Image (cartoon, rainbow, N blue to C red; front, top):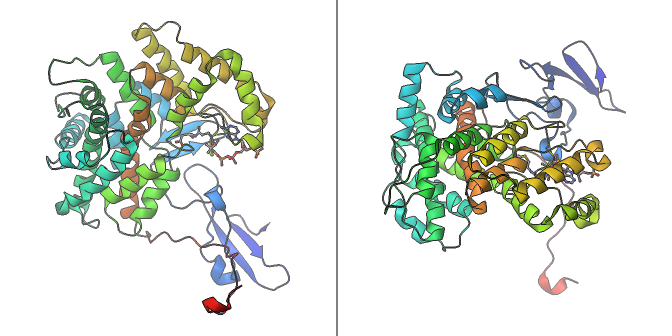
Length: 435
Ligand code: CMC
């Protein structure tokens, strides 16, 4: 590949006189992107990028990440400023609509979302079909997907009003779905949402309250939960968002697409990592065991990883992890937890890993999941709910990305190609003639 003129790259197919001049597309910030759409027509070749590490699959105005510098911007605003000054629903407005709302818009948006928090009463019975020990993510995949069976009035993906109402319904209902998934596993009555509470506050209420007595949500914990939700709201074209976009590219309804996103998020390399961090810390058990554990992680044959470390894009500190580290101390102080053995262990692990040649050479830093698990545990959220909580927060990003894609006139079905390495064409052999 050689530079031709500024703004283009020319690829010449060695041994032929065929070449393709490829336009470089410029975003607002970030590296230029080679527009390879004509490559197959010009040269008869595909590009190969398993894991999509060097591929831009769409144009987006929502989130920007500079992984080398550890920068995360939503609609241009740094995540640090949003986490400190904004609220989850305000960030939801920003992601969905492109701008921070003024006071009247904020009021309308908050009301617009919160009036949809209840679930259709028949959805209660769907829960009875699950085993009591079902993982909340399994329940979420099922119940969120089932919403499409309840909202026939808003399934026309080409209708902007339908898209807006579906976005509101999803953002409003996922906390109720997640909280009920938890209540179901512990055999407590489902708590109906309270629209007089804030978004995060209502989620904590539905998880922790019981009908038999009043329940007051600790405002420090509600604020911490709101911040955790902001930090998880969107993250550019990660695996689950790419899943939502790919599903949506077929014209599938948004409830089905978000259910697909939830399934993708569940894996331990993605949103399931926060739960995996806690399991890992429990397995390590004591600071004395940190060193042998890290030796095991560094051994390729062990197939184990330091959960909560490393990121496909960040080759520096995940900015969300830094904010969570500070929030973690606030929450522990509020709860009067002075010496939390789990946190001590996490700190020791972080300290040793950050000075270890293996992690330095591979630019592996703590990611958002490293601290979120510790805070959530301190807040009394059961481990099995960590990834569900991530799904609740990320629903905003998923639906914003889905909406952006549906409004993009150049949108077409996502359909990757492959290098076929199987058998070449051959003739069918009758069963009695096979070896
Ligand atoms: N522990 C030990 N080694 C690691 C780790 C880790 N957590 N992450 C990457 N490596 C090594 C990997 O073995 C490879 O080494 P080598 O070059 O010697 O073969 C090198 O670092 C590059 O790794 P990779 O697998 O090519 O990197 P990737 O971009 O495909 O994977 C990742 C990114 C996040 C899946 C991976 O770092 C990982 O599995 N981390 C642990 C799980 C985790 O914390 N996930 C949460 C991600 S952030 C939130 C979210 O997205 O949901």
